[in-house]
Image 1 (cartoon, rainbow, N blue to C red):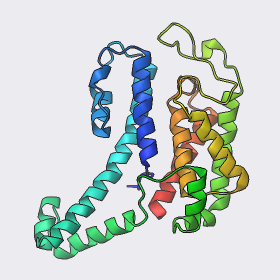
Image 2 (cartoon, helix red, strand yellow):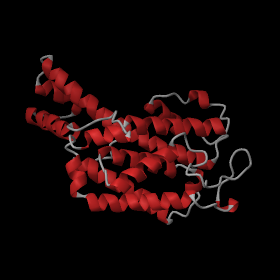
Image 3 (cartoon, helix red, strand yellow):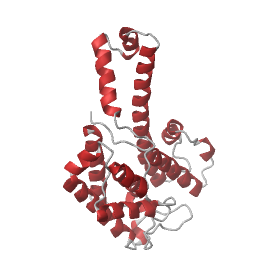
Image 4 (cartoon, rainbow, N blue to C red):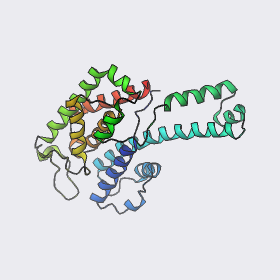
Length: 266
């Protein structure tokens, strides 16, 4: 099984905010059940049911819930490593630590801890995503080596995402191509660099990504910003209405494939 992309706190919070905005927009009478913790929001998306929820809202909720599920996956790995480390410090034997995990040998427990250490060596769930912070961290981060080694591939994937995103923003799509909003109007693509219905700063993240690409200042946080842009696009009604074979969907898949390769390699 492939290692999922790393999800930063900013990506986690953005996914929760998108779900909350969608349900506020449709005046969901059950939105008070949503909660703010990732696992609570995932449970809400799974259990809300179709009554009073347009299909495009439910689809976007599930896409964002998978972002939150990935956050939880990484958080579970962090907790497991912490439990194993603290358990050893408290005098538990490797056999005692391994028993609840179904590991029957002392070496198996040690191997598991070693794998967790390798996986989380450069883990930064609260990574700063401002360009200033990225510049300061760029030369200190060991993950930078992977990006430098695959720079041509990274740039090609980002170029595809930027091109398709700007094409969406710069084109007025026909009303008939888009699902009806709860107020009876059809969503339209914007011409001012901001996705209609997206959260504050969605266009800013796209600008940040474009600036990193233009200056060739690619860093680990650049890939996190690309994840934010991809998530905003993937869950937008205009994008959900596109043919699955549309080049924007291809660009989004390539971004996530790149982030998965990066997460698995470092």
